[in-house]
Length: 509
Image 1: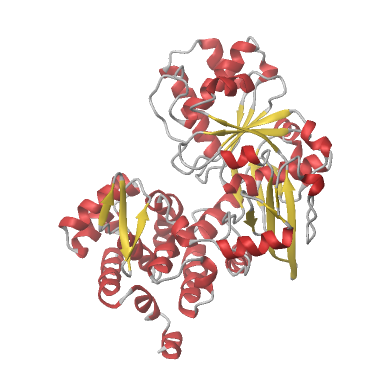
Image 2: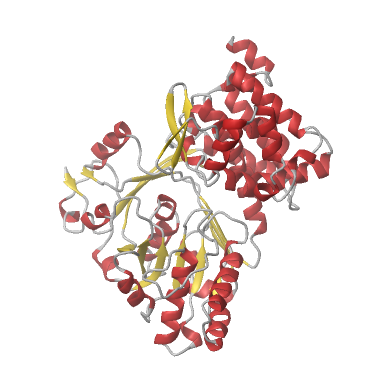
């Protein structure tokens, strides 16, 4: 089979329907600078921009900045930055199988090796938009000199880009950018804007630039929602490649559901004209309801379930949803505890409808969303997604939740390291090691090495640095978590979960 590239496009003879790009799409100007090469960006923002380009609406391509050492850029170069997005799922009770060769990315540049080229993009008159997804820990203040080549942090790199642009256009207010971070943290745009301002002051940049930074540029809060697990396993990849009739090293699978909610005014709507191409792109003055439903119900359920499911032996979300016990837990924690705990006024019927929709997405037979990937930065996700919900649940109902402590206990157990290789800590499941990809991995390794499970539970719950609250003060919570943790160690994780669903336990015995 031919490999995917611009040159091979006329030679490809797909064995199934594939939407191919036209030659005109490769001539569009570079209007977007994107920090991040991950599958979520390729599966949602980049796809939606490609969709708008095909409709003649946006007419702009994306320069992608790769900031990290991990991963391989060569596949992008070999394929001329083309990639196939395979959209699979159910929409309006109909099976959807759509294949699109996306052409929105024009170049992928390495921040470490091609910083001067990135700064040349920064001063292009065509550039209007910055998009980012640098994981939950990417939007952090790092005290640094932005004149480094390149700066270390994402905000440092972005400020250097903006400063170069300010200098090139002599402070022209019309040359400011619309900046749309998609990192899954609340008020991501507001937080990024504050960090940029702090960095500018720390670097002693001139007052006229700081005024241009705050007045000519717009950092939008935004929310993205689409399950994009990325490249499938080898067997699925080969089966899809046989269907397509060509080889694609960057082949990506996503669900049908998609949402991109962006907080902005008429100016933002004008610049982000690609929103007209898809009814699931929302530009609104306030996106809190979108954010809360997605963050608390989809992401929050993922975080409370990932340790439980992975330590129970399930590799993917779909596998867990095919199991009666795990499916019952996922449904129960979302509908019975996370919905009443949402720390925002949301119509209960809207929340329930959203919750049932999420459960259908979790059951998508085409998506192989791996639990181990969801555990990445487990602690940060638990704090952002679930702790505010837990606190509000207590405030509203004044009772100890039944299911949230189960998820928290599994989190503690997942963080039990048994070995270390270099800077990476590893846990163990049924004799096989797994990476603990968490900034707090060393902290937990120390606790597990010297404390009993009960002592560890109390120590972690009292850590206000982690949670911004002393969770041991929540009535009954520490006892519940410690009790479940002890049961999991003694009896196994899935067996502990099954005790909450007696009718299922009776069937499965």
